[in-house]
Image 1: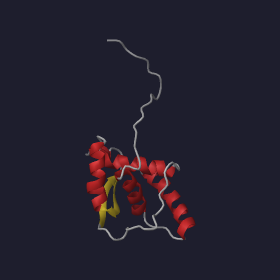
Image 2: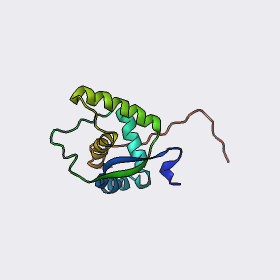
Image 3: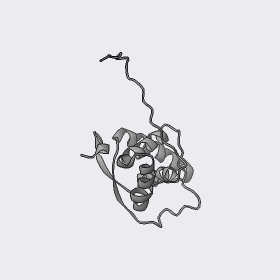
Image 4: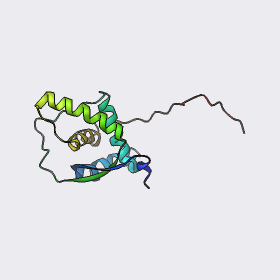
Length: 134
């Protein structure tokens, strides 16, 4: 089992294969997250679901002109459901239609790959467990 698949079901997301397999991988390697691309996407989807990121489809979009395929990702279903609910409402309000979940993933991942989004890891104790001197 891969490190990024722990307790997360596998799913195929129909999106730009070059973006996922090359561009995001390159950026993730630079960030020390090469084996955690699914976690990168999950963090982006979480931020989107919480309203911290937006994902408008650009007017000059080239989406639909690139090769798409099923890209395997490991995502928490609750995160996907929350992000997809916001996406459906947002796109229904903006354009009267709802593009697929893969397009949302592409928009967020493109921001990450192009350096327009930065991820940070924050660690905080869950409870005070004290310390032990050896």
